[in-house]
Amino acid sequence: MAIETSYRSFSKAISYRVLSTIITAGIVFGVTGKGELAFAVAGFDSLIKVLSYYLHERVWVFVRFGLVDGPSDEVEHPGTREIGAVLSEMELSEKA
Image (tube, rainbow, N blue to C red; front, side):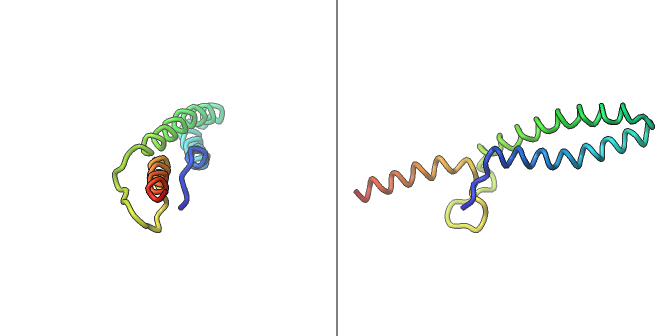
């Protein structure tokens, strides 16, 4: 199963913010007609929101809501990686 890494979470945050920055800059420019202000607002907005999105994603690593145990076609939750390793070691020690 695939595991969601922090690098992937950060990459998703960046790609989403690129689109959102363009939209924010367009709105500010459309309202004010000032390109410099539009880019300043969009840049600051993006910095704050990328960091908050990344932190939000990483907090959800520890939330079990919506996760099921057992075989599944869904992507494995990143927080279960450590649990899976512990369970595998326990199974191997029981077989020995």
